[in-house]
Length: 109
Image (cartoon, rainbow, N blue to C red; front, side, top):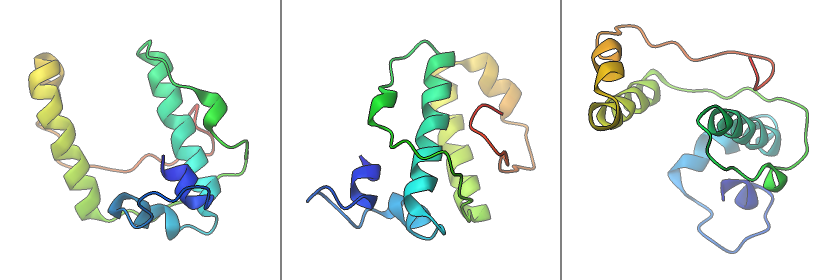
């Protein structure tokens, strides 16, 4: 898990490209914890199991810099998944022209 890399509690792959955005945050551990809480909230909405106990308990939130290229990449990746998993949502989503990052002060917003 990326969080363990940022906490320096693993000997695993420490230079994964997905970690760059978290390492660039003012508080990388808070940033990954916030991200994981958002993932856990979405998992709850979808009735998936996500072990929140593994997320560090840090209530502070840290912002991340995200490039337009990263947003575009993530959006295209999502569309590829939706095309197979939810064709109605794919048809509705593929016409979106402007992608804006969500900005919130808590993962439940």
